Length: 325
Image (cartoon, rainbow, N blue to C red):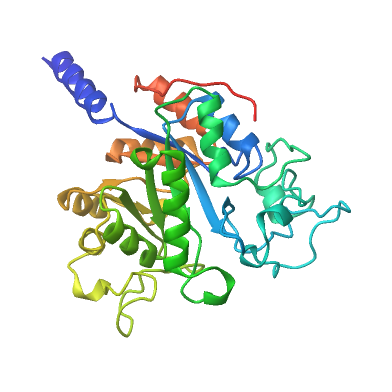
């Protein structure tokens, strides 16, 4: 009888994880330059369900793939080969063709990022891609199923550093529609103003509410004076829990910082009908713990590690589609 119970438990785990979402964070940040065509090619070659990526908008309205609102001095080199000196060269003040003069294929030696990702293989001569180029790369790979989890990188407290929410959403939806990818995208953000605009304009596109409650970022702001400026006019203190706030914001998926997620908050999210996909999970032991808890997917800098863990547990893994950028 005990063997039957073990088999039943295994079957239940397999059924629960059949649609597990393996998301490559910024492509495969632990292995290749983040948010670049070589990085996304690495993720596609490994085999992922979803390419997670960040976006900004240039002066001439091109949606580009970048985590930072400005050129990153630990990442961006000018035509002279020198890394940019400061963090005030904002994407919104540059045309797309101007951005192409910067190389973002190698982390600066001695930088914090270089120390965090020693296995990242540099790709000199790599420029910041447009979102359209990322879409085109998956077409080149022949991958008709990989999804795109697209983050809008703007902040309510840094309004002058990016285009505003309305312009951001307009440019992003136009780029998605031009590529015919509306059925394969989710749009995520810590700044829920963009998510509420997407929900109003294109309710068929799923939105993902990102949250962090930490010293370095708290976009929820429990116990604050009124609503957090990040949550689109909604106040966590008016709701029973965070899951209820996410549901009220119209998101179908909640993506918390993985260290903020526990069994109780996961149960609340499931009770609200939400999918839960934590970020950014890089250690196999924590990956396994969260899978056991019942999350719907994970965002990781090391999709190879997560894929290996999934395979050892008998979980279905997405097919690799090798491609060169």
